[in-house]
Length: 176
Image (cartoon, rainbow, N blue to C red; front, side):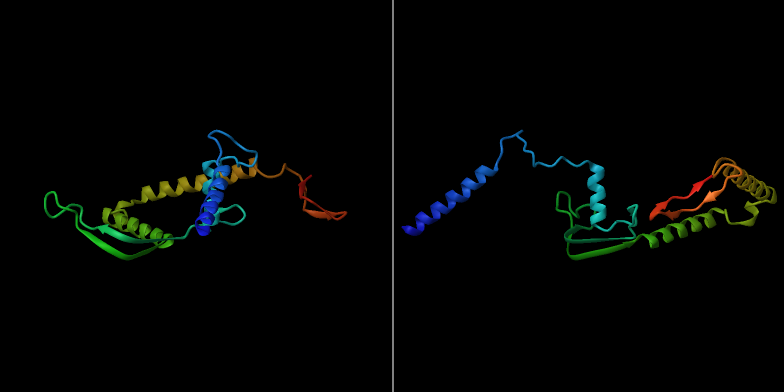
C-alpha cells in the first residue's frame, strides 16, 4: 500500500513538472533564441564538421565518407510481374571519395575525349591558327599589364611608408 502511494505521488510530481514546462501556443519568453537563417546554420555545420577551415573559413573539403547498412535493391525491377524487387542485405557499406582523385580522373577523361575527337592531332592545328592564338594571348597579357599599371596602386611619384610602431602602437603603411 505504501509503495503504491509513493508511486502515485512520484508520478504526479513528475507530471506536474512537465505541465509547468509547457507553454501556450504563440507565447514567447525573453529567453527564447531568435531563429537562425539557412546560411548561418550551414556555415556552423560546415565549421563543426571540419569542412570550413582557416581564417576565412574556406571550403576545404577533400574527402567524403559514406556508410550504410540495410537493404539495397540491386536490380531495377522484379523478376516476375507484380513480385517484389530483388534485394540484397548490406551488412556494411563504406565508401571514401577523395575529390582530388576524382578531379584527376575527370581531367584524364577530358584528355581522352580530346584524343578521340582529333583535337590532339597536329593536322587539326595549322600554323595560321596557332599564330592567331599566340598573338591574341600576347595582346591580352600586354593590355592587362598596362591596365594594372595605369589603374591600380599608388599615384605617380608617391612614396610608400611601411607599417611601423610609434609610441607603442602599430601604424599601418601608407602612400604619401
